[in-house]
Amino acid sequence: MVVVGFRDTATIGNAYGLAVITVMFVTTLLMYLIISTVWKRDVFLAFLFVAIFGFVELSYFGACLAKVHKGGWFPLVVSAVVVSLMSVWHYGESKKQAFELENKVSLDSLLSLGIARVPGICLVCSHVTSGVPPMFAHFVTNFPAFHQILIFVTVESLMIPKVPVIDRFHVSRIGPPDVHLFRCIVRYGYKDIRDSFEFETQLIEKITVFLKCELNCKEMLILEQSVLGAKAQRRKELRLQYLQEASEDVNELMEAKEAGVTYMMGHTCIIAREASCILKKLVINYVYGFLRRNSRCPATSLGILHSALIEVGMVYRV
Image (cartoon, rainbow, N blue to C red; front, side):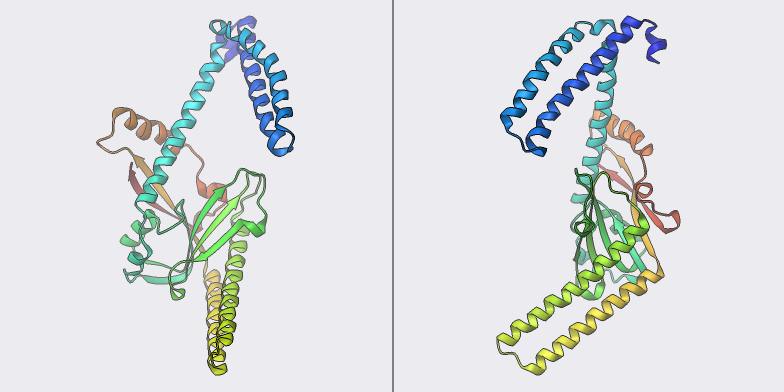
């Protein structure tokens, strides 16, 4: 497209030269962070590297800026368009997450509905790390039933290559033990491969370990009671009760896994409020809406089968 549009080697060279020297200068600036933080070298050495190479590259950059009107404008326009699209995407995603945080539902209000339970495990994926995400509350309001084991999952992408499996899952229990509600924060690096089958296996194993750790904590409590002078018969009864509860929890978890694992995700439509300005409506309703419709589905990135996926449609007015 550039060759057909310019049809001149000098103009193409001006556009190419400005693009290359800009990339080189940005790389030099990033080398400051590499030298000082990754390689743990002296800050003065990093500054000296940037000063030497940056001076040379800025000289070339200044020469290329003199030819902006002769083809150098093209990479500037392309970069401006890309930065604008990235800014719109970030703005839309931040508005979406802010809406979810503001409209999350408390767990008590969810449990007060007296919802029926069905066999299986449901993984509710959202950005909410506390409370109940609005899309799940919207689902149970219209269909008052959810699975036997319910796990609220939040996937976080870290700025490191790989996250060790032992540090990937952070499981906690929410609500009373008899309702079987858990929350799991999953952390991935940018080089980690996301596979739904492996993810399910590791998650179930982590929850099993979590239940056993709960039992160990309760046994430690029994030992503390023995130090405080609790009766031996009472300690024995408590230990048997905790062992039975832990065994029942693990058995129910395995039975629910055999019944099937279902993923629930939000299929949201982000719309600007009626009182919003024209610019915000244009950005959210059209530009961000176009990007979101053409973006990769989260279920695809996790490798989730369509037969195991429930998408809950909901309109967010931001």
